[in-house]
Length: 128
Image (cartoon, rainbow, N blue to C red; front, side, top):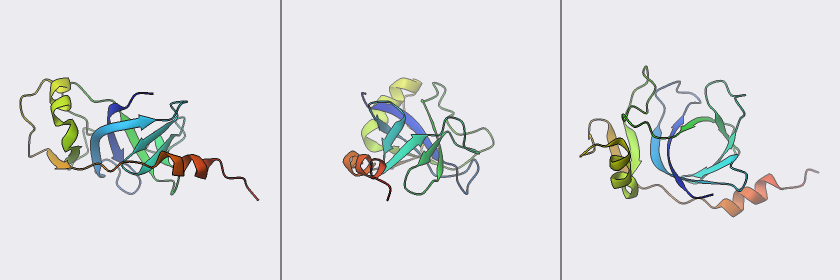
């Protein structure tokens, strides 16, 4: 699948104020696993408490969604700045039809690549 712009928020331990990012997410062939910022996040099929994906290494829950066209990606009771990959700012601004990035709501960051092979091997390990 082609990488897509996504909103990703850590829910475990934070409710609606966890660290949040906007960046390009990659997907597994099935589309059930999202690779982002060095993590592999698996679709929980709505089994999570507050998230719709979980980290396959540590079980942390994440909320992953598309970008809202009005720019209000955080939950209405949530708060905190959203980290946005500096490489996607122009794409994000075009999707939300804004002229500039609001520095009160966003902070620029560098999203690190994810070693998908590492996670494929982890998920396919044989159980003893």
